Amino acid sequence: MRKSIKECPECGSTTIFRDEEKGETLCKSCGLVIEDKMVDFSQEWRDFEDDRGGSRRRTGAPSTYTQFDQGLGTEVGTTADFYKLGSEKDKNKFFRLRKWHYRISTAIERNLKVALAELKRVGSFLKLSKNVEEEAARIYTLAVQKGLVRGRSMESVVAGALYAACRRHEVPRTLDEMGEASGIEKKEIGRTYRFITRELEINILPSNPADYISRFASALNLSADTQTRAVEILEQARDIELTSGRGPTGIAAAALYVSSLIHAEKRTQREVADVAGVTEVTIRNRYKELIKKLKLTKEVEKSKKK
Image 1 (cartoon, helix red, strand yellow):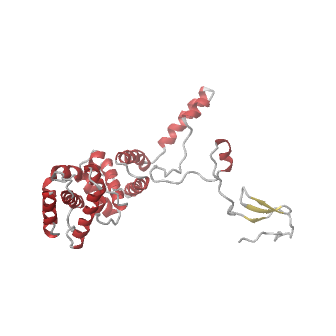
Image 2 (cartoon, rainbow, N blue to C red):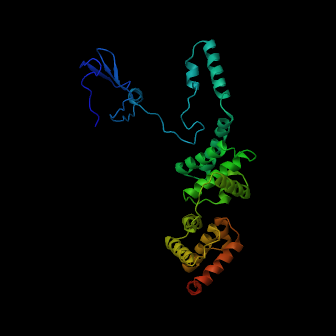
Image 3 (cartoon, helix red, strand yellow):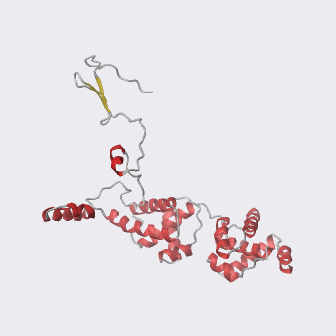
């Protein structure tokens, strides 16, 4: 606890005044500033009424990477302010100030303005959470500051940053989905993603195939029992290192296909492949590996006889 000051160290006066607005403790007799830069330990107000909130509020909105100035910048007026102006001279001055306000922004700020708008659009299309968008915006901002965007299309770097953020937050999104949302080829997104993560030294763990099960099962309208069995198959495959070196979407789709056969909810390989964004050949190869290595032939054959 901070001790309260009872007398002035300069003149010995006890007429001590504490100015909470300025954060200072003053002596009324000699004017000595005894203490400054004091911390206000009183409660933080939360107001929901516009007329009283302004006087009590001490803080603004939190900073965020999803805005080019991290939400800390200011703007020269709004459209509503324009209509409050009376004379034509004031209106011209208003537009002149706004024009120069945008002109003095740096090249990085102008790039971020456009890129972060695109990032929000793609994130909304993919139904990504705010945490993922924030992480993607942070990655893109670092890439711009290090000059990694130069020589590459802005859209591909945005897509690469979003894919990296999805991987870091373990949000299952495929390169095909990223390509569909951004309009960039998945090979280009993959190249950019690997380049960004390497240059920024971002460590990303391999995707867990089990993360894709619920999404694929929902699209194929499969039951909860089928999903559970698919996860069990993936765990067994992981124990014998069958998932190593194989694409997570392909092995997840194959496990779901096997599980659907076991639970008599048969879906064609074409249907499963379309949902997972892989080829039928991949499903067929992974299916054969799972059946053989995990010895699931009897279970599958038994379900077919029912």
